[in-house]
Length: 240
Image 1 (tube, rainbow, N blue to C red):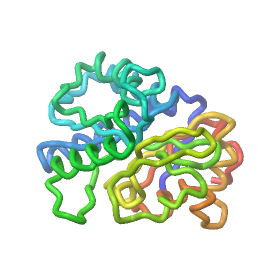
Image 2 (cartoon, rainbow, N blue to C red):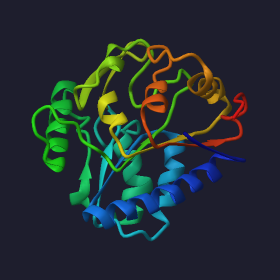
Image 3 (tube, rainbow, N blue to C red):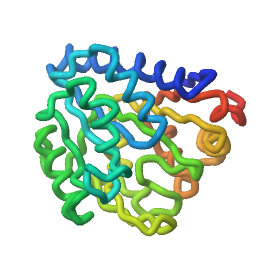
Image 4 (tube, rainbow, N blue to C red):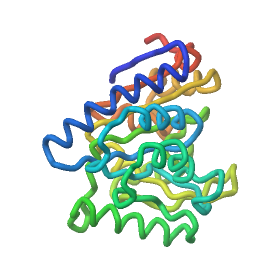
């Protein structure tokens, strides 16, 4: 696990962007195309803005989402919609390479369509899991990541690609990639900012392994290439 701390969320996001691009180039040189799965939220928006300004050639990069809310893409809560405004449009990202979760559909159908899209892109045999080149994750103050919240039985599911999930405390559905897909990625990159995340960061990196309590531990403990980008506020309670 690699750990980088910066004075602000903006600087952490900029460094995260500089970390992602060479790994995309590496994937492109080896396979001709690259796959990137991104998360939603306010901190990722900073990352997207930096990515849009790089001048990177996105023609052979395929973009996926780690999770999505069950809302239309025009809804302010849509992870896809936020990425479209802050990244896809200003970067002139090719629409044919966008693999969004159809949040305007019912959760089961949205998840099923997304799984089929992933299976087609990665040319997967039945039962196979995809291997994304890069998965970008955030983390909530409760240590959830993707839409895997504390206590959810899907935290133990390493067999399926993605699924609908009902978030009890929000009383809303989402669609999320599942643990087997996440830990199978070549590179996992966490971008976490804010004082409200400090305790979660400490618990995920230093507390006893209890993924049902701290879901982000799944990723930090099971992936071989995990890199954290944090601001000083998020890292303030750790000993790293």
